[in-house]
Length: 395
Image (cartoon, rainbow, N blue to C red; front, side, top):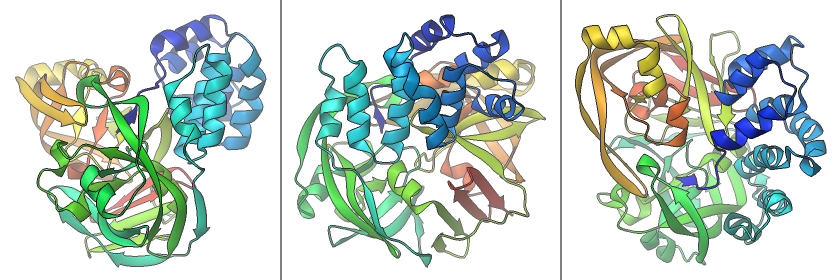
């Protein structure tokens, strides 16, 4: 699920035209190359406040992001500075601050700001390490939880801007549902209206208050074969509150443990509301959406541009059916018989790798792909540590 208010390349290009950033950094900014920009910032090679602030926001560095971006909120770059800070607040469940930022830079009433105003800020009541069983079902990763005291089994979805449930599950657990006038983006960029609700969530030994849920129609394809108590997902604000999660092929899901700093890992960042991960293919560094809610891994047009010779030699042209909330459709693609990606410290082999050759969402214009659960399941263990922005895999 994607909130519809997103950065656009047009808005970014306007801001950069007004910015004194170096030409190379301007291109990196336009291409959302946060990993390269982070290296340049660390080397002291970046002085432009907008670039510094946006890069800090991409890595969840709250203090730095506010230090660089807040002074821009009253100038010509106010809209872009506001959007980076809004994404930062939204990811961490600070909805009142997100609403205030949107309102301060909107000339007209904004439906997303109005929606956020109705959502109390998410808060962690208590947390401690925990181990409990999980299971794979219908190519999804499910964990046990409770919502307002009702037992449920929900999908772990790192790329859901908010947690979500079906209309049926919302009624069953007694959520107070409110219609939003904002829109969310789904498959192929289609948008649709949605409803919202808040609830207290318990998972393992963690208790969270005021978790925001979008309430989606029962007709959503995802819900068709799931029992009512499985019709939902824990989204990014919940997972960020847990900080560190891992699961292994022993069937156990862990909160607060699993990361080994002595082993290799891949960097995590955020492109707006999307978590992105750094991986390599044939020694080329690439960035893709890290999406545990996606059943399959897809590569995007920028990957096709990097490896056009490989696609011509080994690829077979066809189409792929893509689907999600808000719509579905066929997209032209090229299938490679095998492809090795290095991520999280290990090599993962894709068989029948789909390379989409047409843009499906805005970020498929600059990101190399979407890493889904099918690829992660090739590892014996997965750890996501948001406190250090790392993904670590074990074989």
